[in-house]
Amino acid sequence: MKLNWGMIGGGEGSQIGPAHRLGAQADGLFTLAAAALDADGAKGRAYAQRLGVAPARAYGDWREMLAGERGRAERVDLVTVATPNATHFEITKAFLEAGFHVLCEKPMTMSVEEGEEIVRIARASGRICAVNYCYSAYPMVREMREMVARGDLGRIRLVVTNFSHGHHGNAADADNPRVRWRYDPAMAGVSGQFADCGIHALHMASFITGDQVEKLSADFASTIAGRALEDDAMVNFRMIGGAVGRLWTSSVAIGRQHGFDIQVFGEAGGLAWASEQPDQVYYTPVGGRKQIIEKGEAGLSDEAARLSRVPVAHPEGFPLAVANIYVDLAAAIRGEARDGLPLAEDGLRSMAAVAAAVDSARAKGAWVDARPPMLR
Ligand SMILES: NC(=O)c1ccc[n+]([C@@H]2O[C@H](COP(=O)([O-])OP(=O)(O)OC[C@H]3O[C@@H](n4cnc5c(N)ncnc54)[C@H](O)[C@@H]3O)[C@@H](O)[C@H]2O)c1
Image 1 (cartoon, rainbow, N blue to C red):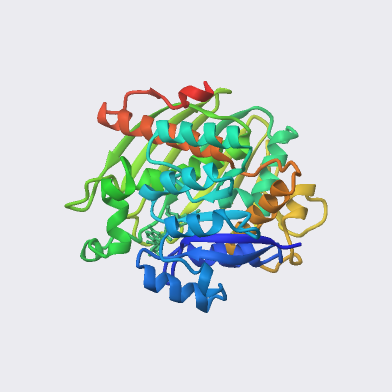
Image 2 (image 1 turned 90 degrees about the horizontal axis):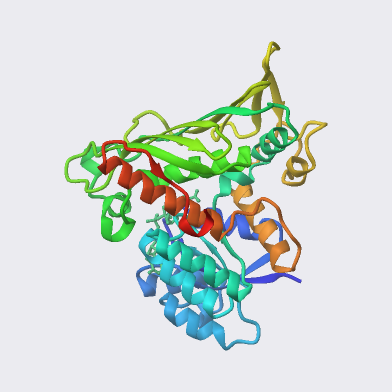
């Protein structure tokens, strides 16, 4: 039977809303049953109805949705939170406490303390709180994770990752409301670009290597006048297992489009992957030739094969990576364990890294412990 799904934020014209709607509904696992899609209640109600939500469940805001859904027999099983960052904590907390499963957009919260609270609530309630680190659900990212786990690369020495685009590089567009909130501390928190994109790269480094970030040193820059938060950051990090990490994230790198890539170098070989060509992994064994490993070809890991729906050489793309998060969420809601589903603990680790990077940048790059106190 299909699960009932509710969505908060991600209204018409939003960046991430369509990927959630395509992703959640791609495999026939969820029905969009309730929604509070927009900061403008009337607009959100109208759009939800155009998407097929019954008028009584097309809500004007999330509190109304919570009140309307909590008493229903056929209430939503899962709520996605795709609003701007500052609202994630209170919405996620409220729905978890009311017994709903939640998929929260990143960053999960605005502080480490809030992140720890969400982890505690999720653990106590037995509800799932997942965080949308959707790039980790690309089939070939799962392939890289498997290759590292089975030792193809040997001990990991170095991870180099970039998430640098140029879409906020136009100073004339800096007041566009969809750009501005990302650099407004009241809406985005203590960090701009690092909390927006850098944490995806850091999560990916941990996800592929199976290791966690221990400490980091950061240099933040705000390159457009009037921006209170950084739009460019360089972060050096060390992983608990000893690997060296280098991360560059920027939103003013004009000409770079999505700009998310990662390279993992071990003593027995190296891997390279980029989100703009997500179906290929470049693998070079030490002393050997560079090879292209392709999504859909024979001999891939079970995980890479499981998360791919279309044949070799046919692109699946971003919405189906998001769909893979929903596939694993549906399984987890039904009680099956799903290794690889990003959870509240991952969201909390990101918040600890954000806090550490802000402290480090203020202290001229001093090395700061990046582990959340709760998970040390
Ligand atoms: N996982 C990813 O790859 C990814 C990619 C893009 C954005 N995001 C995250 O998704 C979130 C939204 O980002 P976006 O780029 O779509 O932003 P956006 O500004 O394009 O859209 C935000 C949407 O939320 C609605 N909204 C705002 N406040 C609301 C409220 N209180 N109740 C209901 N709706 C509300 C707005 O009306 C709008 O429809 C952010 O937290 C962002 O970090 C994640």
